[in-house]
Length: 238
Image 1 (cartoon, rainbow, N blue to C red):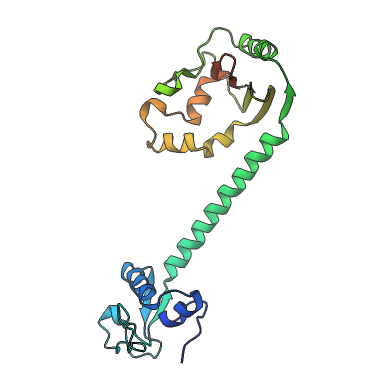
Image 2 (image 1 turned 60 degrees about the horizontal axis):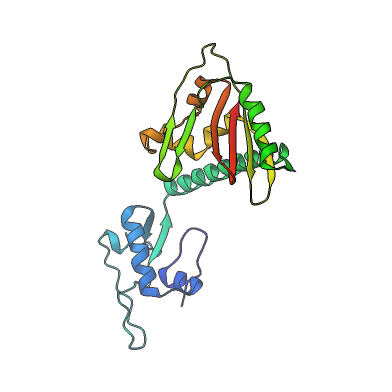
């Protein structure tokens, strides 16, 4: 008689029936998880530990002449350890947290999004007006040749130590002829891939850019990228 899977333990046979998996393959997978400590193999009849703990449980008989690739005990059961449940719960909370942050970022970006049709000449006038506000100061990031990976980060410190709190983006693309402008709080950058990988040292040294770099740089142009007749991107902080 097959047992019915419960919320925390079930036999491999019952799980195979419930999930429509090959019983022998599923059994070996569960045993592997038990060996790593993620699951605990127990004897539901209370006759001692499961087979991965030197149990004397009998092997399951072969089914109708079709031998399973590995014997599956009739009384095989798995119980998820408490620390694993706590870990999964913690992971779920982290995922929910990052999802919420992603939603928050999207909210700020789309709430402040402005679009309008513009020619390249009109776009360049808008870009020049913003550049003029910051004088001849070098951009924080210089994209010389993206195809060759020639990108330089100028980790400059603002001479007056002025603070920044808002990231602005202005882009234009020849394909749709639209000028897009938006902004978002600088603190959201702390959760960006660039900042995280740079902070933990995963990103190559020459490409690392953290939110602290931006804060030390102060008000100014972060990225000024132009491909004449194709697209223009301007990112600045204030």
